[in-house]
Length: 206
Image 1: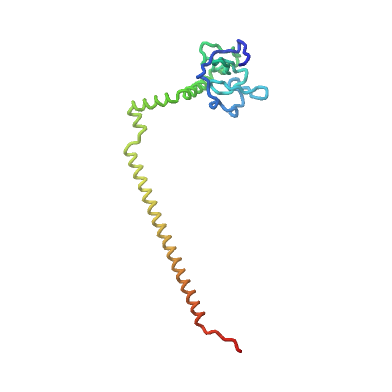
Image 2: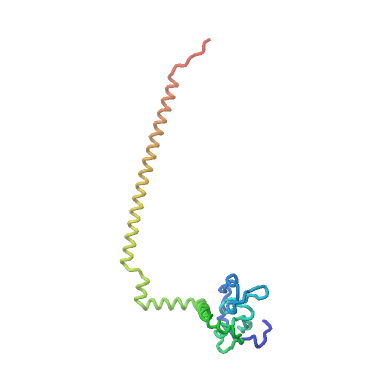
C-alpha cells in the first residue's frame, strides 16, 4: 500500500467498480492530461484512473480505498465512486473543465456498466424485443423482401450456369480441333515412314 496522507484519501471505491486493465485507454492515445491538458513528459508521468481508465497527471488524481488496497482515481470520478466523499480543492482555472468533461465521464460510466453487466443488458434487450411486435417486425425481414432476394439469387444462378455451358462448349470445340490436327499429323508421319521403307535404296558398288 502507498503511504497516504489524509488529504490524499478521497473516498472508497467498491471493488466491482474497478475497471479491468484491458479496458484502459492506451498510453499511445494520450499525449496530455485529460483534465488539465498539461503535456506528459519525463517529469510529468501518465497515471490511469482505475474507474474510467483514462490518463491523467499526478496533480489530477487522488488515492481512494478499494478493499485492502489503494487505487488512483481522477478528480472527475471521485464524486461518482463515492458521493459522500469530497475531492481535493480545484484550482479556479480547472473548475470550468469539470462541466466540459462531464459527458466524457458519462460515456466511461456507461462503458463500465456494459462491461460489468453484459448478460443483463442482453437479457433486457431480448425481453424488450419479444414484448414489442413492432420491434420484432423491424428485426425480421418481410416475406416479400425474402422472395425478391430469392428471385435475384435464382436469376444469378441461371446466368452463371449459362456462362458455364458456353465456356464448356468453346473448350470442347478447341479440344476437338486439336485432336483432329493431332490425328492428321500422326497420319502424315505414318505415310512418311511407309515411303521410307518402300523406296529402293542404292547399293554401294563393289
